[in-house]
Image (tube, rainbow, N blue to C red; front, top):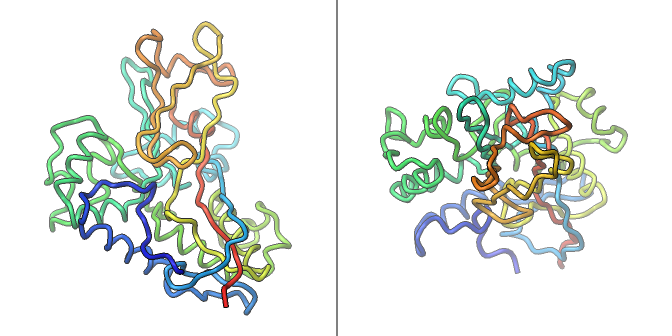
Length: 327
């Protein structure tokens, strides 16, 4: 049978049982994926699992590096500058972290003490605020670690939830907010996946050529989702996003990172929301008993001075499934 209801990213249960938020979220995802039957020359299709049933034959995670590829291109000969630029996160300068991964570094006495990463989308928080505003205020307080957050901080002059509020820009981080040149939104990611069905002859281009020969910007995420989705559709398969639909932190690799004494680092990663392998919010922080902070850790012999040095080792994903239509 078709899917009864789209679940929340990471199966989160932020709203109380019975809240209208859950039905509203289902309608949101159903509308994003549209009516299904988004075909590619009559070969395959992107389908809506809430309206159509298929026999699933494969699942695939589309994975890419979280550090913004555009910044690497723009500062290929100056890596410290690339890391500095990518770390900027203000209300005015928020266009760099565009790979559906955003982060914020906290410093004390000039050294980084914690870096928080998120792939949570603004659509989730906007809809949750519309249905459960008090819940959102409580979540903000817990996530940014400040009991002083109030509802008025999170809205614009018209009383509408503002994803660029100070607790999600200059004073904290809760979810994605980049809007230029690409939107870090679930809407954009789903449109990318659905639109992959209409791409013609992508098999003749590799990842780099796809970006150089089309209007697609030089990101890691866009060509990965576009090429992989279209490849499956061209094989005559029915393809959709894996439930629960969302953008996730797939993993991280701290191999070779060292403590101040030169020994390997411990496991300083903490999944705050979601789960390991499909996390929505992750914090990197050294326990106090270790006697040093994140800024004392070395990657490739260089101390961590920017959150982007860690982001370069974090991967992001969106899940997909493919199958054949049932009679």
